[in-house]
Length: 384
Image 1 (cartoon, rainbow, N blue to C red):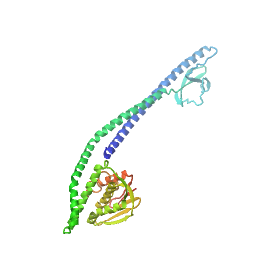
Image 2: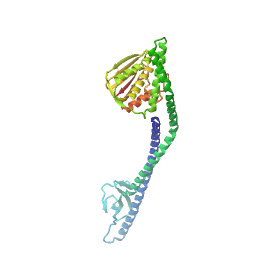
Image 3: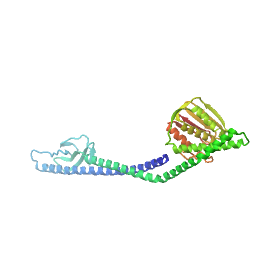
Image 4: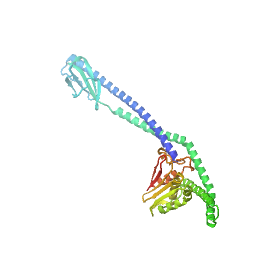
C-alpha cells in the first residue's frame, strides 16, 4: 500500500471509527442508565413489598398484644421502627444517618426505603427497611454491553477497512497508472540519454571547434535529462534494489556533485560559497547518497535567483544548503515533501526531488529540516 493511500485510509478510518464509537458509546450510556434505573426500581419494589408485610405483622401485634411480642425478622432484609419524632424504637439494625427527606435512596452498597405507618402501630410512625443492593443484574448488564461493544467494534472496523479500500481504489489505480508511465518513460529515456552524453564527451575530448557554447547547452540539457532518469529509476526501484552500505567520504562526493552541476551553476551565474570540512564519512549506500545530494543541489540551483548565492556547509554532524530564491510559504513546507508537489509551479520538474530526499532521510534516520518563508532565503539542513 502506498504512503498516500495509507494516509487517506487512516484518516477515513479515524473519522469513521471515532464517529461510530461516539454514537455507540452514547447509545450504550443511555441504555445502561435506563437499565440501571429499571434494576433499582425492581429492587425498590421488593423493599416496598417487604415493608407491607412487616406493616401487616405490626398491625397484628398492635391489635392482639400477644405475649411475647416477636418483632418480624427476615435474614434478607433489615428493618427498624421509629416514632413520630423519628426516634428509634426497635429493629434489626440501627443506621446512623437517615435521609428522612427521601422515600428511597442508596448509600454505598445498601438500599433504604422509608415507609410511613398510619395509624401508629405500637407507637411507631415510620418503618425503615433496608437490603444490600443486588449487583448481579448490573454486572451481567455491564458484561453484555462490553461484549456488544467489542463485537460491534470489530465488525465496524472490518467494515470501515473494506469501505476505505473501496473508496481509495480509484486513487490507487491512478497512482499505479502513473507509476507504470514513469517506468515506461524511464526505460525509453535510457538509451538516447546515454548516447547523447557519450557523444558529447567524445566531441569535447577529440575536437576543439566553434560552437563550444552550444555544446555546453546540450551538455547541460543532457545532464538534466540524465539526472531525471536517475531519479525516476530510484523511485521505480527504491524498495527493490540491493543497497550496499559503506563508509562513504561525503566531502569528496559532495565536491564531485557540485562539479556535476557546474554547467547549470554557470548558466544562472550563481556564486557558490563552500565550507566543506574534509574527510567527513558516512555509512550510506552510494546511490542513495548521490540521489540525496543531487536533489538538494538541483533544487537549490533551480529555485535560486539569477546571479544569486548558493551557500554549502558540510560538518561532521550536518549538511546545510542555502539559496537566494523566492522562498516557500510556511504552510506549504510540509506539503512539498509529498510526491508530485512543487513549491513553485513556474519552474519545471515533476515534484519528485523532495520526496526522494525524504525517502533517503527516513531510511537512514536522518533529520530533514526546511527553514523558509516567502521572499526569504531557503535553508535545507540534513542532520545525521
